[in-house]
Length: 275
Image (cartoon, rainbow, N blue to C red; front, side, top):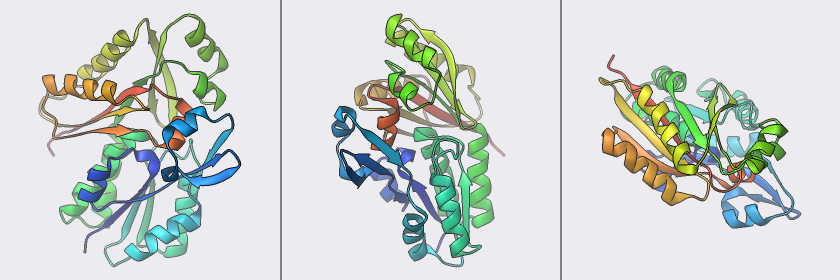
């Protein structure tokens, strides 16, 4: 046996990577048109077109159901979306306490592709034979270094969800700018906006270039909300300059799309320096 890794749907991991690393992903919930459904049970277009949609994290029971079959002497590490964004971390923590000391729950303090990169760092350590303490330490090492910078066509959805001040959404609508933000320490931090979509992408790449660590392995994810071609192009531009040790394109789950709206494109990355 090895340490088992559990995460939530916000990690934006492709199905192939979930299978490859034997990960368990606990889905989030949508309240859509009077029905409560798992995020995996609806199309993203339904979420965007719905007049009334709210979201919630998995319950403690959802996590217990997912974790209990995995329990062994090796233990289970649960990695969640930032606690500041969702009740998911609290629910996972309650489930972990109920199931005992062989379950560790860690707040990644991030989301989407950045959360996915943390999950994969832990999964690689587990597959390499690391024990629970070592796998958790590897996850925390990635958390301390991972970055996520993204652009959205409009901040309207984020304004409605309370993630940024209303004036920022107004500026995006009326001045034709492309808002940019960096998500770190559990919060979205506004960056200087760009005057076009291409300029926004170039600014994302500039942030990545400035962080370059020549002797380190690059782990990178291009993330998107219903904009796969833009994310694939962004990752291709990274690959043209650096060969990543690992890379993936991660689509936002339905819950994340409900909060950010369609069109987001971003880059998450961290540099794994030799130790």
